[in-house]
Image: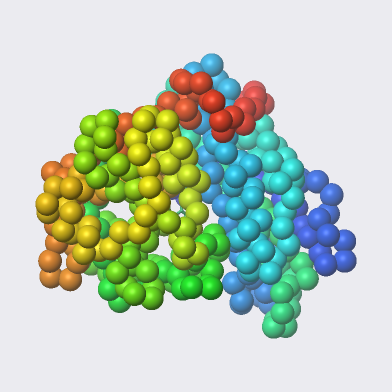
Length: 348
Ligand SMILES: *Cc1c(COP(=O)(O)O)cnc(C)c1O
């Protein structure tokens, strides 16, 4: 059986559009064959990091139709990220047109008979002007590429172990933490490597000021569960400006409330996480994002110490929310919020 890594083998096409200070957006998105692009060694994005991106997915319903999950929300976040880096904002209708053009052209590469697979779309906008002038660039290139990827679709995904980073911060007040910009990832890799060296799968970020409030896990948002059963409470750290406003986070808050749980956007400190896990008040913790959907956390390491979350296994609420999300993705339940944008694909 074919294996599908993350972002290694791309589909056959990409969609592109350019922006210049003189002319603005140059018409409509164009489809090109996927391939290497020429660039100037003086390309501003390469030197000064004016680069923002998105990550969203299309899923295949049993009848074959392809549904892209919340592309309008991704379009708006792409605009907010661009604004923060003094880049031009791609109008939402052009973003959606690029998504539609890509899904129509290459969506057929997503096998119809394997619900573990999805089509990951990667829009990116970068400063393509050849100039080292210290100012926002005067030319930008938008690209949308994609690949077929394996979700982590087993019924009980393996819980991950995490290391609380005491040395590094992902974001700072007034910084770029709430923008999906390329540099945020570069700044996070060293902490991620430290986590791996400590035998953990992921890094957990604390707030950069007091160094005690939990913010995110790697490139995913976090949730905690207090109690269990129908009276369980689902909480997630509030969007303080140093967290990336995840669209999966937003979706899970909505779905948890619809399933009858109390939801809270509330700060939780690393001491609270330990004490309440040890006392049994916190029963689950999980991370969420487009790429891996819902990832349970089994074990936390902090300095020389550590603790288990719940029994260290995937918890029932994480699994219930994960199922609610994947049922929506695959068109098995009514899409009450119109979160999916359906498209038909060209015959392959
Ligand atoms: C993209 C991202 C997320 C998750 O956002 P989704 O919209 O749910 O995919 C969380 N944290 C960071 C730092 C991210 O870059």
